[in-house]
Image 1 (cartoon, rainbow, N blue to C red):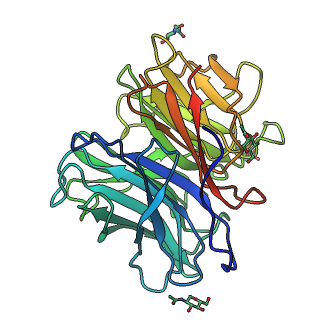
Image 2 (cartoon, helix red, strand yellow; image 1 turned 135 degrees about the horizontal axis):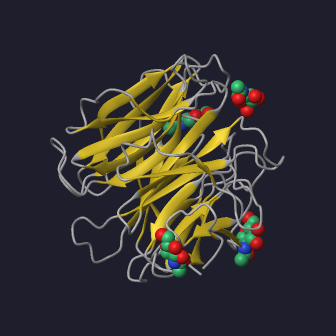
Length: 349
Ligand SMILES: *[C@@H]1O[C@H](CO)[C@@H](O)[C@H](O)[C@H]1NC(C)=O
Ligand SMILES: *[C@@H]1O[C@H](CO)[C@@H](O)[C@H](O)[C@H]1NC(C)=O
Ligand SMILES: *[C@@H]1O[C@H](CO)[C@@H](O)[C@H](O)[C@H]1NC(C)=O
Ligand SMILES: *[C@@H]1O[C@H](CO)[C@@H](O)[C@H](O)[C@H]1NC(C)=O
């Protein structure tokens, strides 16, 4: 299926824009019913929240399940959400706990909060605030934080995010880890350019079939790229998602010369050949980029996605398809695109 409308904001809302859809498949409690949960950014006229929707038919139809309200007093927006299901216990939160994170902000600052659901998304409780930053800004002097991404590895939950607080970097990517979700370790760099001006942003990480991890991100302010590639996508490969800082930075350029750009999402699926397939969605165009050689920089192929353009489209492998069917979940477009959340399937070539 394609172009299924998941959500449009109520007609009487002043700002009906949506953005940044995210999906999680619940599979930690032997679920037989293939529950998918999703969320995205809305601009609700009242105290804002993240909507949680549920699908029982692989993403074709969705129904509202709950709303997650954030805690930081006076912060009016919630952007860049992320959904995750725990596969192991952390502190008071057992395997099967649903986590939602996001960046809440106002003119006075930014804060990445963590909330948890012990009942499969029906209700959420505040857990902790992982990091705080200055007011939202993409200028060199800004000290904001953005775009959390969650991944557990080596008995630690990592929260990866964009970080403009370090005076040595206009922006860098970093992470913090926790074993109880309440206390968070030091800020560790994932991508911090030697050139102050460059702004790596928007972490996405996937584990590949060879056991290595691929980390992709946009690189704002990069030069020497075509005009359409305003934030060329780069990537790194490492044995641990917590050790990307020293890995080589590679540009994602397809065999036809296309420079993938802006707000990537990357997954690895076992379908598509002996090495499986890395699938990256870019946000500068409708295209996807695939790589069947575990990230060999000469092996990226641009493919027609068959789906509309969207800012940071989420990709979710659909179960019981041998990894061949990918749900494309489009939370909307940053500027002029359709003001709706939509979904459709992509088949791995
Ligand atoms: C939400 O805000 C609108 C004005 O923007 C107001 O008319 C309405 O009563 C509010 N709803 C609630 C539930 O507070
Ligand atoms: C740093 O990056 C900026 C933006 O891409 C570029 O204009 C500048 O030449 C770079 N500086 C150095 C020393 O490479
Ligand atoms: C599998 O990956 C290796 C590199 O890891 C590459 O040499 C080989 O060509 C790939 N196979 C296919 C079918 O792409
Ligand atoms: C789905 O909608 C997008 C525009 O949002 C369009 O570009 C695309 O062609 C549509 N796909 C189909 C199969 O209708």
